[in-house]
Each structure stands twice: as structure tokens, then as C-alpha cells.
Image 1 (cartoon, rainbow, N blue to C red):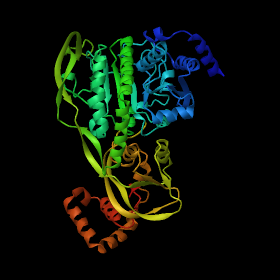
Image 2: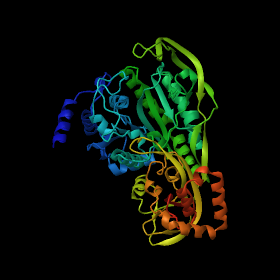
Image 3: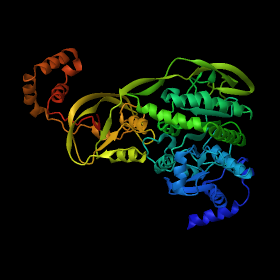
Image 4: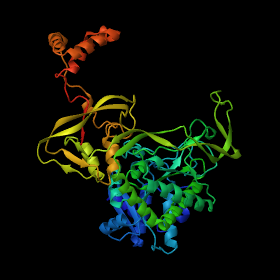
Length: 566
């Protein structure tokens, strides 16, 4: 009742045109924002507002749909069948530029007559990080130039939601995934504010890595849409620049393309062949200027998506066909040394002594702008590849993994009775783990694996996951343990990395001797190891364990993942 009364009060308060407010140095809090969207939906049949699911905070996450079908089932069906843009705001609630920009766009669209002819379906998540929105302050973005108040980067669990799209620790992420697959958007935009080097640009963007895109979408995005967008924004006095990801300390040393891994919102969306962008306005520019830049980016993108809608739809269809024809999956992309150059508008810098530390510090001089070419590294290459299996089998006890696969509309078949199949089994040979938790996990790196073909006993409730489906890239990106954001790397299979049974040396001594006497090859390898390895030679435990591990006594389940391939 309290929540309802607050919304009702704010609904009354916002019975004025908010457009002037949105252009000032302020941004609405979550309750004000939802109250305004409620008003818009109540007063305009072309605008629909849906509660799409839970957030970690306890308040719902909303979705606003413009140019839908005035019926939830028909609206989402229309979105899937027609050209749709999904805009996600406030994944980092301290970066609210997109919130204001979308409000201005809607107000302007209403003012201009609410024209829907040739308009794509426009879906807007008003503010995704509800917990961060409710944790309101004016201090946590220390270097950001406005607004007066804003939310916090972390959610209620102190998770960065823009690192959660594979591990899905937050309730928010399950709600986002529900929204995403209900719409199947053709274009996805995530709005942000950058906090890197100082330069002249207000507006920068991230687009998907060329090397990870299907040829049709790579051509559409980089040869058509982005050049069009750059030209249209230039007419509005915005120089659109790729995101300034530094090679070293300053832009003069070069900038490089951002690796949009699946853990990020746009990287996740790209797995499903959505043309994906992250908008990054510059933190040091005034908030109203950043809002205007975000508004113009969104507005022009909507117009260009409309003009090229048939090409876009065709490119997505070609992309989905392309992936299903591939027999190799490439992953673990890294930046190469290949470089181009790009005209960059920055500021001169110096390194005077700090008056605090008496150590040289970096200082940009905004009164000394320059335009010059700087190195631009934008070529990535895959370091690994694997033959795409016909299907995976995930053991039924892995409920967390299966739940996440199902949430992402992955098609699967439950095994109805116990059976035995010859399958490709994956065993972890080695890996490293970070020392401190990152987003609630001890992420694994440097993964090495060993594949063997073995008869595997499967049980009722295990699931078969064919790879010949539109979710193929998502399936491969999560179930192949060595991929950058696999379920293995995010600790879903850590229990299989612990040995459960050992031996007592005083009892095992005679058994170990028997094993060596019955296995000539093992005995030769054992003696060679003793000869060449001093540490091994001086450790009775290491020697006995070596024999134990090579024997039939050693548990086969150690480091064997509950994911199989065929």
C-alpha cells in the first residue's frame, strides 16, 4: 500500500510536462521515474508499460514499449516479427544520461504527434539497476560533472550488473533475459558514462568486435549503419568516436577496440545476433550536454534503423543461417599488434609534480586542444577453436546451469531413462584462480583440458542440448570450459575440482609396489621421474601419489566435468 501511495503522489506531482526538467542538471529517482512512465502509459495508448519481473531490491523492473499492439502477448509477438530496438538504462545507476535522454525522446515524440508509421518497435528499460537507483547520492562518481544526484554503480548485492549476463547471480539478470528473449531485439543499446582519459569528445560508442560477428552483420554494422550514424550526428555537431580504451597511460600511445565479452550487456546481446552498442558519454562534460548527445544518438539510431530495417532483418537471418553452417567455433580473442591510425581530438598533457605526493602526476590542459592521428588497434584474433559438437549433455544435477540455459530459451531434451553412450568427456588438466573475488566469484584463468572418448552412464533427468539452434553461440560460449565466460570459469563446476578419496601411505606401500611390478611402462616412467626430479626423488608422498594416480584406484570423477559432447 505504501508503494502504491507513493506512486500515486508522484503521479500527481508529475502532471506537468517534464521535458524542461529532463534537460536540467537533475535526473529523476526511481519512484519519480516510474510514476512518470505510468502517466505516459495511462495517457497514450501507443505507450505500454509492463512489470517484467523482480529486481534484487524487491521493486519490479519495468519495460516501456512504444508502437506495440496494446496487448502484452500481441506486443511481444509483434516485436519478434518486426524491427525492434531495446534500450537499457542505468545498468550503472550513477550514469543516468540514458534515463533523461529517453524521457526527452518520448516527450518530443508525443509533441510531434505520436507518429507510428514506419517507426520500429521501441522498447525501453527505464532503469535496470533498481537497487542502485534507490541508493541515491551525489558523491560516488567522484569525477563526474553532474547531475546533482544519481544512483550507485552496484546493485543491492553490490554486484556490477554489467558483469552478470552469463553467471546471472542477480534477480535483475533473470528479468533482463526474460525481456530480451520476449522481444528478440534487432538492435540493442546500453547507455553509460565513461571515466577514462580527458579529450574533446562528448559522445563515444562501443560496437561488437568485427571478428566475432557473422559476415552479414559485420558488413551491415560497420559498412552501413555506423558510417550513416557518424554522418547524421556530425550534422548535429557531434563527432562520434569509438570508445577511448587506452593502450597505455594517454591516447597518444594508442587506443584499442573494446573486447565485448558475453559477461557484458552488449556482448551478451551480440551472442544472439543483435546489432549492439554501448553509448559512452564523457564524465567531465556537463550533464545536460551528455544527455543531449545520448538523445541524438538514440534518435538518429531509431531513424536509421527504420530506413534500413529490411537490410537489418535480412542481415540477421543470414547471420543465423551462417552460424548453423559452421563446423568450428573460435574463442579466446586477443588484441593483435596490427594497427591503423585514427584522427583524435584530445588535449595536450604534462606531468608536473603533485602538490600532495610530490610525485609527477598526469594533467590534461583543456585550454590546449589538438587534432592528430594516434595509433588505433582494432584487430583481434582467436587463440583457440573447437569442432562444434552435434550436441552437449549436461548432467541433471547441475540445476543452476540448466536453469540458466532454459532462461535463455536454449532448446533441450530430457533423457527419459538411464542409458550408456560413447561420449567425449572433458577433464580439467590445469587452471589458475584469482586471489580475491571478482563479482562474487574466484574466476578461473589459464584453463587446460584433456578430452577422452569413453562410455558414459547417463541417467534420467540429464539433458541433451543440440547445437543446431539459434542459441548456438550462447551454448558454445558457456559449455566449452576454455571460453572466456564459460560456466566453468565462473565456478559452476568447482565441486568437481576437489579430490574426495586418498590413501594411507603406511598401508598403500605394498599395494604401490604391486602396481609397479604389474605395469612395466609405469615403472619405467616412475624411475625416470625419480632420476630427473630432485623434489620428487626426496618426497615419499609425491612418489606414492604418482603411482596411485596412474592406477585404477584413482577416482575417475576428479576434474571430470559433468558436461559431455557428441
